[in-house]
Length: 458
Image (cartoon, rainbow, N blue to C red; front, side, top):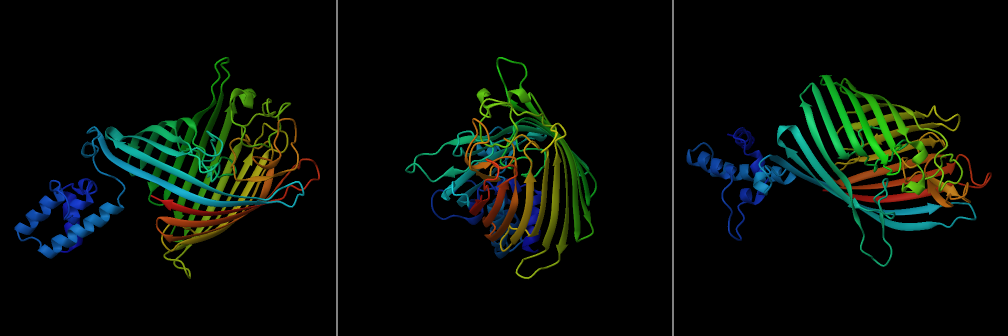
């Protein structure tokens, strides 16, 4: 009998979860007291005694099971890890990113800037009985404490100790988990269920509230999804007009044979309590760009935000490509944003072309994106923190000068990535951006922004 068949036979006895608990049991460590034999050891010894497998096959099976256990992040039953017996699995995950970043502008009022940053995220997911899930993730706090759209911490301040914040904390009920239908309901501080690009919402943004995600798969090549979320932006004690963010989205992912893939989506977002989206209520002043009522520091955005977002992508997969292991994807994607509540400066565009995809050993990618986000297309505090330009002078009282992110920006982004190992990826990005409406008018807002990243996944 072949080793692979031994593995399958062991799996039938339900020992796979136990194997991940202690790989040393499979490897037969020589030093120190040995723990009790695992289910796998008991079965392997029994098979060997009955003459079903040879001693050589036993060792091969143990080595293969140890290899699989080392790769498998699920650590088996919670009872064996000291949790209640309703915990059926525990999964740890995270990443560390080191970054060099440079800002370079031609405006005589600007000063070039070079800095080093890092981001650390570490989380755990608990799989529970009755199709329940709970989890949390911690992340570096960022240079601005509590920053909702960035966890980058700077090398700075004489190596002072840096803070860690709650990045995710949630509970979910997977009400449906079938091959055809799936339904997930969540609450807490969540991954954003609305699948939009950084043109609309920064990918580091983890909203607080409720999520609903429904998927229907009529066959293996097509998936229809409905995503929704209801989130709190600001809770205010002296008023009942709290600020909320609502979103709903429909998505269709499809495969057309072995080479073509498409994706099409439409979303509607809405913000209530706009009058309380001012920084005197406690909301952090991270980005800028919206038209405000009076002083930016104390005035709310002038217009409501009810943007419609439409996106689509087409991917063609080549069987092979020089210098790239496996199938080679070529992807064209675009997104359009329109906020009908604002009379002008209410649109956003994104067009992106990507060759390859980094993330696995030997894989690489190269991409180009053009992006434009007009002043009142979306609330300024949601859009990507890296999408910035140079403000020579504040646009109004309370505004910022210097390198400022938010809305009222357009520009080009070039990206390169390479993964020498499964756990390590290098990325280089260069941003060439400018303000659509410059401050002051006629000033030079052009900005070149270089980012060089090394990312370790664990």
